[in-house]
Image (tube, rainbow, N blue to C red; front, side):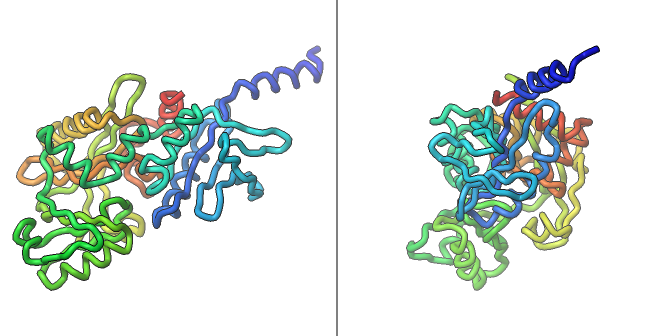
Length: 339
């Protein structure tokens, strides 16, 4: 008969071999609430027979590990450790779901790299480059990636609305250069609407980008690395009830997100090829999502998201399920790759 002590030792040994995974969520931008939803889905989905999962809220008012009972344990920023009962935990890896700053623009990636803690999103430079829309577009255009015509404005610049419209035309989009979840974005149909849209965008960022409004099918495509192989998911078609894919359309049910997209096989191949090429050119890792407008059969790159939304309403989970994977399996692949 097996003794209770022997069983306890077996259980202890098994538990001690589990990897400690901190799921970072929140952030300092307007996207923090969306990030908390993404992080909650990851915590819920990661296999608890393989990992011990710790929700870590990174917010302006503090960094805390939040236990199941709601107790908050402060994170020691010296080594990213925190208390868990009588233990002090230093995570084996971080699953990064922080949208916006400081988790999508390279700051946290650099911090974790200095500490030697693996994390699931692209590296600090790649994250910073992809988060800055105009820098990212400038790099990719040099490699022949097709993009909309754009015009850049910094806060404090003298703004000549007519000069801008002469370059990009109408309608056009006005966007914060370093923001996500459609915060601060406006679509301008008339010259008189340009300056108010610019002021609205400046509420999110001190740099803005103004782009020609392309006409075509909007699609979003996820890609991720599985060891050294880049895998591309099926495109999702975005059909917004609003004038464009804004916050309400993304998160409040004002759009249809159709996976796979209702596009031709040739268009599917083109947009998946461009997604993979962009992932390679920018040296990305983890799961990233690239957005395109397919105009006259040609994909035009809009932007790439280095820490895309993972909430139930988000595009990547839909594409993962369409590919026949569970979120548990998919998130496990991302963790194992970074480990």
